[in-house]
Image (cartoon, rainbow, N blue to C red; front, side):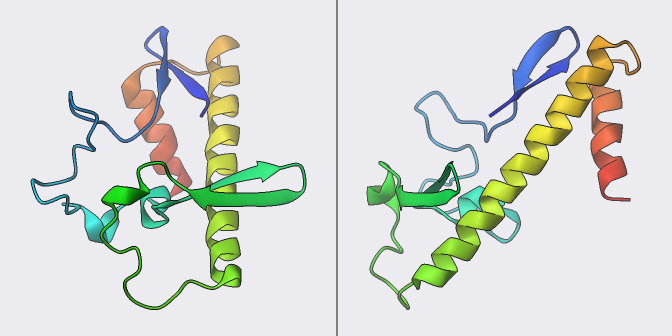
Length: 127
C-alpha cells in the first residue's frame, strides 16, 4: 500500500484497528457496523488477492477463522473469485496511481500537502 504525503509526513490509508488489532467497525459480536458501506477489500474477506506477473493469485486470509460465513450459503465459483480479485486489484491500482500523482504534485510544490486539499482532491474524483 503506497504512502501519501500529508502535512509533511507519510501516511498509510488502511482500516483503523483498536489496541487489540480488531477493526474499529466490528461490534462485540464481530458484526460489521458499516456492512452495507464496507470497502471492497472487506467485501472479499476472507479471500486475499495478489498479482503475480500476469496471473491473479488468491487464497484465504490467516484470519479466516473469524469469518462466520465460511461454509454457509452458496459456493463461490472460480469466475466469481476472479472477478472479485480483478476488481480489488484494479481498485488498489487506482489508489496507487492517485497516491503517486498526489505525491508528485506535493513534491513539485504544485499542490499543498494539507489534509483539506487532500480530501478535496479525492472528492474531485467523484464529481
